[in-house]
Image (cartoon, rainbow, N blue to C red; front, top):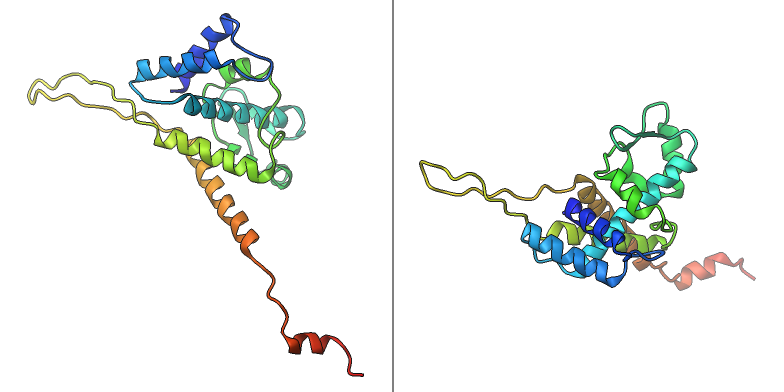
Length: 213
């Protein structure tokens, strides 16, 4: 799916459909039609928009790590933030500031070079443009879109003995799965904290606070 989306956006960029901070509606419509036609899916423009938002988040976090976080390494060959035993303490300190960046530890980002080309001119999103809770909700929605989109069915070579036709499911993005699980856990934790109310003190507890007159 990502490769089809990227190819469509390259065509839209050549047609002048890239705005300052986002793609024009025609670009999302063209991407939706291209993906659905090419991969035999039934995505909506919102599905496409959410997937692009995920790419922008990848760019925002990794670009910050590359340019701001001195001591953290970027492996340009493997396209991942490389965290070793020597840099683990730096990574752990970084997560205290950017807790939603956890899934990027030693995880390859597919199509990274294309993401840079398509997103570098935009303002980074993610923690830099959303509140903590908004970021969790957004991550969960994007992961759900990705996980629930129909599988790509690719006809395989016909079996000469059985005359059957095999089908192959679309490969899932492991980073999306991790982000989705992490977002769900964080969302449940935030809701739990919201619902926790301090119990009202009893009369005996109040009386015990004050000395007898």
